[in-house]
Length: 97
Image 1 (cartoon, rainbow, N blue to C red):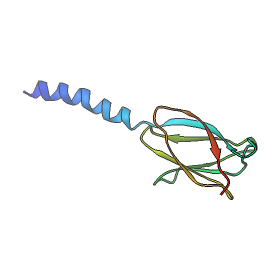
Image 2: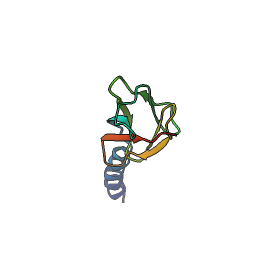
Image 3: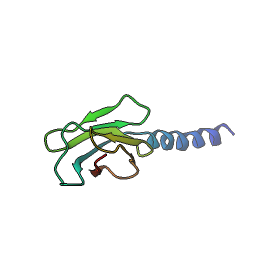
Image 4: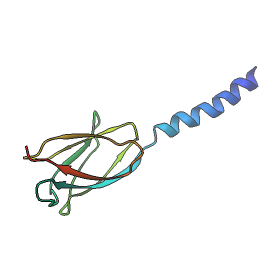
C-alpha cells in the first residue's frame, strides 16, 4: 500500500508544480487608432505585485503563469484584461478611451 501511495505522489506533485511554473511573457502595446507604440503602458499580473512598463517601442516582458491574467492600462486608453494561456508573445492593441 505504501508503494502505491509513494508512486501516486511521485506523479502528482510534479504535475502540480509544473502547472504553476511561470514563464517569460513578452509583447508590444500599440494604439489601435494609429498603430504607434505606447510608451509607459503598465502591464500587471492581476492580484499580484508583478508589473512591467512598456519602453520606447511599446515592448514589455513580465513573468506569469498560463492561468494568470494580464491587466494592461495606459493613460487615455481603455484598460484590457488578457488571459495568458499557452501564449508567450502578445501584440496588444489599445483603444482610445
